[in-house]
Image (cartoon, rainbow, N blue to C red; front, side):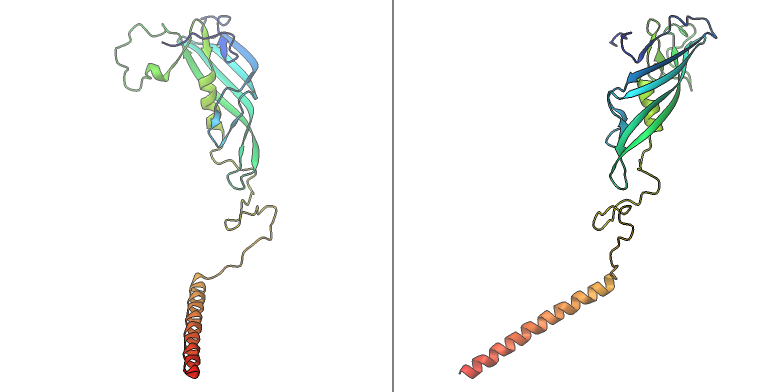
Length: 211
């Protein structure tokens, strides 16, 4: 059983003033606090409680109320290249139809026709109210970058030592050919073996001299 909408919730809007006259328009501007999880988890998002500016256009249509709007906010995250904190200004556009519960009762079949939305994919008005939170969340997530960077030219971190390359433009490591490295390791092994053999031979000579 779904809970009833609370008109005191800043993301719940009242359409009674608009009425059910097709073509009627209403514009609303409101600043609300960002709900929880408004973004991409562990990547970038609008902090809970941060201000979100909403500009909405409500239009009455035959089936319900068509809501068109833009949400503006500042998202925070971490650069995927250098791991430094970043801020991203997001402007998310959205449009959604909130349907009257009785809009299409007449003539509806038990099963939705091909291409027709199921009720789970639709949004409904409840006593003339609609909740924008789900629509807002979907719009903001789509407007956010999946791979946020502090700037497009960010060089990231050195893969060998982790130094931030933007702050150390001349940073580099001497490249070592793995083939030469392997030969160097083999040579050192041979030298160590020769030293061990020489040490054993010297020990044998000393024993003979003692006898």
